[in-house]
Image 1 (cartoon, rainbow over the protein chains, first blue to last red):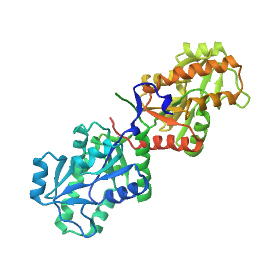
Image 2: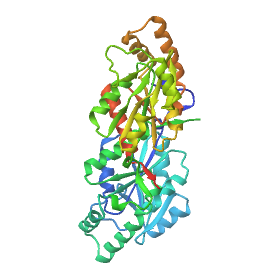
Image 3: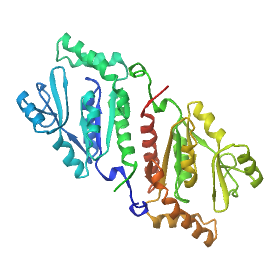
Length: 206
Length: 206
């Protein structure tokens, strides 16, 4: 196929693409991302840094880099973060090194980013395409159920998560795609269709 | 999901989308389109008008509207065509009525359009999204084989088709997506991924 493309034209998928997955707490971002990574060897996960406490099932360096407030301060000071945001009193950030190195090696990177930090990945001008995907539950009622089911927090923390979720939905227009997570398998297939399509996109190259 | 979207935001797939499939002669556009239509009830086919002779396997009103030169002149004069082009001495055009009515009814429309006419579908400002998909064979050698296999034409006509194909590849940068047709099933799955992704695209609405 290569010899059929005119000079200066390429497929977007010939280089690395950053796929940002965001959405309200409890929508199932981690489950969708795990399934994506297990099926597509070109996809790699960008591990975020956070100051929030580790949950029992989480692993440092796999799910997040769990760092102290002082360490997070240092990451910011060193310019080591592409973006960072505060969520429920804890800080979350995207280490540059997790993203740029892999994109340069031609790998695609999946990022699990707070809704308010997603747009910053695009405006950071990575020099690579950025695709912003917003994951939503099938309904508001279902979101409430999912946040409750997690059950690791006080009633006040749950109410706060829901208040923030309402606010996060207002950011949907900043995103490229909306994916409904009514069923995990279906949601994964939807994101896979987006990834597949974006790789077939025709782009101008230098 | 509906109640989760902010005011003024919608999914592109809530309205009709025009998917234009173009590519050099012999690449397998008709086979890909037939398979797409048989699997997706929201997709409908826009039948083009042409002055070229009908091939034995073709059906008037299904594959094309086979019209006389005078009838084609009349379609142009009436402003009934979205675009038209000349290919190997025959004219091909897209009747407006085939496209607009269905898009207004919320159906997606697949168009099999000559490469040089594809961009005109977008610039016609239908008031609906237009997605331009360029279908290529896996290699130039394979294209030559496929055009020969069809075998309905003289050597001069074949040579002319190949010369035109070379020129058509130069139009790839005008398109949104490039799909390789190495295997029919795979090519159909690729176009389906594009259709699926485009329907999940977030758009502003009035």
